[in-house]
Image (cartoon, rainbow, N blue to C red):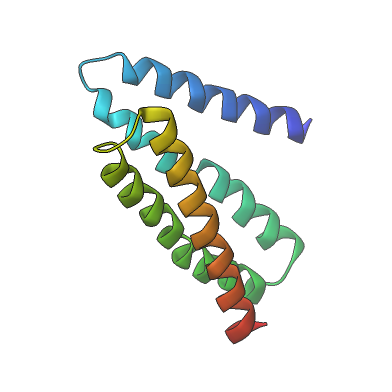
Length: 112
């Protein structure tokens, strides 16, 4: 049942983004994915199944996890000037993957 609720929340977010992207306030579609829907789920699960200290560590890591997202946004912003949309999106995702991988490596080095 919990998995179904999570899937419904995800579907709702996708529909909301689609509706907003067609409205005159299309730019708000960029804010919706930043609502902490999945962070709430992750933080609840960690907080309920682990210690408060584990939850604090997860929260701190989540703060650092905004860096790969910024890398994605900056690379997409730059790339859309030079290549087609699909290529720009693919490149930005690759940049996100590299930044996330580096974040995990550095986190494990200093906190592992």
